[in-house]
Image 1: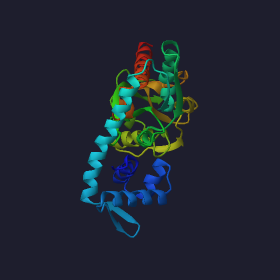
Image 2: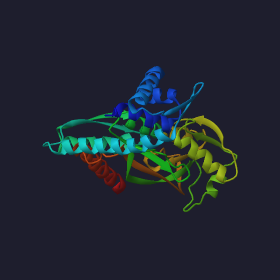
Image 3: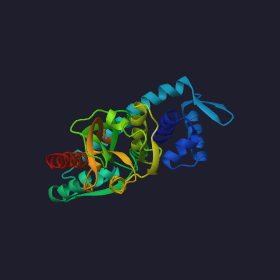
Image 4: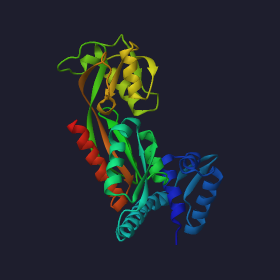
Length: 299
């Protein structure tokens, strides 16, 4: 019988490309990953890895095994979900990851709702960058998470992750000038010479700002790198520059800041491991998140 834990390491090697990356993603040492993969080769009696110095690549046999592994892992999640559904109630702890703007406006109201409707369900919340969510889900560090993508920055969840639509938001241009009643992206071009406030490199929000400005023919002159949109709006109000802010981040807007809605959107999704979505506790969390979003939309 093949060891599922070893198969999972092979799947992650196929996805991440190096043993070091697999070790980091799953909190192993590189030596342990190598030993487990070597043991898997012995168990299968097949060559699974091509080794050239420190580089490794999967053989065609290993690629076939990875395809089966995806289905095996999803079925195991479904089996555990079925066992959970067979018990009464939703008593469990759900580890939920969320990005900062969703914590205040969506996650906290959802937690309050769950406290009333499912008092036996506990939530453990972790602030995470959406780019880190797939690894955290696949590694078992999170059960459910919120991720987002922009029109011009699609997210890549990768294998083993299911996504459920939650919220579509408009993106605003935040300035101290009077907002336009209607605007296309040329409103961004008008600030080609302005100082810009963007997220830190590596975040989707940073990439969105760069790509939006580049689509209008210029590279933004980034004066400040800030991930917290509340602080971003305060910087705009203080004359520190202009910024692009999604709807969830446009809360408690300073009086000096004007928001111009752009034809640019951010989409938030609920992410979980493939096959785990039907767990009663996960379904309850999803329902509470949707309820919080409806309340937010009603204002």
